[in-house]
Image (tube, rainbow over the protein chains, first blue to last red):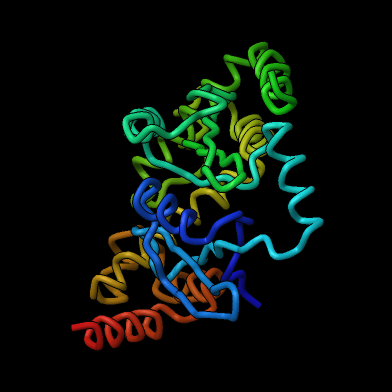
Length: 127
Length: 132
């Protein structure tokens, strides 16, 4: 058994695709029409046969309550690793990305938290 | 301040009392990042971190959540994947990454990836040829 897909819940798949590819720099991998929604995944540019991130539409009402509660508390839905957090923070600020936590050293790890414009906080971590 | 920011602040204050320990394990980790191709052992890593081997193992696990041995193995397997995918032979990959023998390299690689190095290399070469 292998972990092949993980997901982030998004309120708008097209908007999410733009943010996760054009802004964060992931690459679209699968785009399969499924009725009202799509099976839409992105992968890391440097690991294109690695785990896929599903941009999962919010088709389930209770999920919206869960997403909002997480967002209001500022809790990241997931975390991505970066090589140089300060560099990526500056690059993303220049692209008007909003951060709830600027680069902050937490023991051996440096983290920051951004808003993905699709209803989630996402943590970036430099180990 | 949201709930997560409050938690971060509290955890940061807790961590700040252990700055010296954190410097030690970060130093050891950076040493592994630089020297993982040289068949280094944990005695050498711990010396670079200025502490005993057992103290280093305990601290590393406390802050990173995995043993330094596992971290080191991950670095070597990741590098092996990259080299094999780029077409480097199994024997060259094995020797350039400081593995003691092709047998131990093959066994470890299969445990971590589910494939032997030669099978992995072959699949990557085929998919590369297919793309071209």
